Image (cartoon, each protein chain N blue to C red):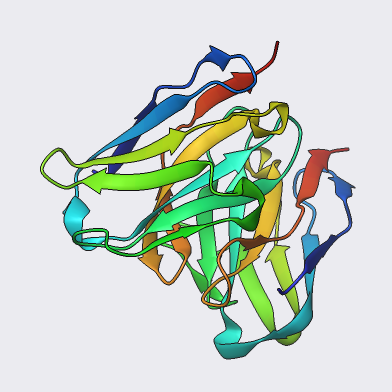
Length: 119
Length: 108
């Protein structure tokens, strides 16, 4: 059974940093591209970042992030990461990891982890 | 960027009724790369449909999708209690991250 479990969400002050993790199981993690998608309270889905399969050589980011986030993966640990720096109030959201079925079509999602940025 | 506009914003229906949700794209969705997701309160999105009309694994056949070009529709033939949720469309394979704003299907 495919499972993905996010962790690392927390309450943080503006300007702070967090690292989110997504532990995957039930599938061959290394062969799938992965993404982070977020959802602000009461809002819709917003794609954040994606990483290619294998070594994760290719990474992609939403323009709105302005270079503050870094996606990475450790295939030996079946884990996806999102390093978030210089956090802002508008980054407050539930962050989901999602597996790419193909292109950016997401067939499995984690349960999400909440990031709350406030002073 | 392809902007997806979903309508209506909220659909109020009784169980057993037919639900028709619209997703209109500002630009042509080539190859019918249009997906639908279902999200219930407090839960992650669930993959429903892809290629406009293909159901994902395990999705019941009361869900159907149609459309091409810029106009797409998700139809739920007879609403079950578990179908009341928010539905998002997505244009994939184009530029990362193109989701519609969602349609909420609520119990009338």
